[in-house]
Image (cartoon, rainbow, N blue to C red; front, side):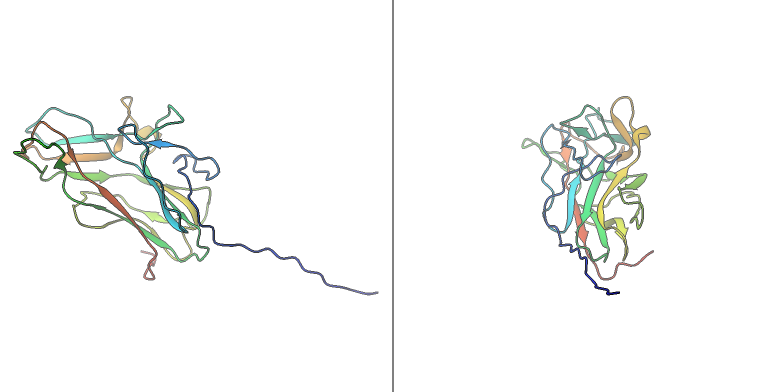
Length: 226
């Protein structure tokens, strides 16, 4: 009798390209969707590296009558170019590094809501207005090693707030952090999971106020489980 050994091998390379947004309720990377900004425009494209933010919803809290009472305004749900369906708002992260070293996602509001009008601005800043992102749900086609998400309450302009932590061994692949579920979407197309609180004693002009949310994805050596 004679024996002989042959070998089998397979290799994997780090993949660096753009991962298109996925459905936050059924996050299959092979089935992209095409989100629409609240104003009907196309969102900015996602990153093309190996650790990327692929998409983050923009929030439209609507137009309302000026009030001298404390008010909470709900954001519009996420719209799409290729579907009439609405979904919860979400942010999407993809980790293709193959190192399982973990990552941290944070958000910072660049400045307080400020008037966009070029006309007279008696009350230029919407003082005391705060964004809240409630009921975070993490989804993926991957069933193990899920990152941890937390609600973002009373977002403070200029202060980085943690949204998601993938500790060592967690977060490889494509992950969606959505706020709420389909049950959070009202018949008017609003979501109860994303809101803006405006104090009644804050003076307001009859105009539009806007802000920018900056999402920060980092690979930090200090990532550890909470």
